[in-house]
Length: 231
Image (tube, rainbow, N blue to C red):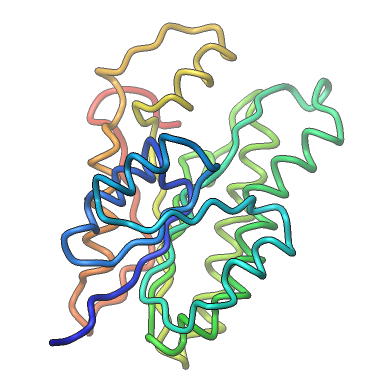
């Protein structure tokens, strides 16, 4: 019997990451990243997944956590932070935090896992945002990180095409998650889940990308609510 493909999903304990885990669980063995918590353990129990509770900005911890991963078919970068504020108000500390989590940690984890991904001729999926295509007022730091994430994905795709590695960026509109509630509270606006995507819709795009036929490399997908804000 052929081995099932292995997928590592960061931010896999809730929201979009958890939805992606549920979408891939029937066909993949899962490593689910997230902060060590009962939430992470519960979804791992639900899906038969292995918890991967690693602080992604801790280079030593990440290096130790990936040391035993020799083959990896799918790497989904779903973890991230949102910090809103005007350029006049955001401190250098906030800029560093957002870029460290949303870009530097992604690049670092990907670099360490490239040998395992190459061995499987695997797939890297980066969950981006409409903010990675357009920056709005008070979204400067977050949008800058998502523009950088797009550049990271584009560079990786070109560098690794000779190794059979696929790289997909998914630009989402607003999604009905706990993080979105925090964003709307920061913006001072009402929370209107009927105008947002459900996490399963984003997960469906990930599943479509990683199960595409061998002749098709899906490089970018934009998925937005049928009604509601672009980002």
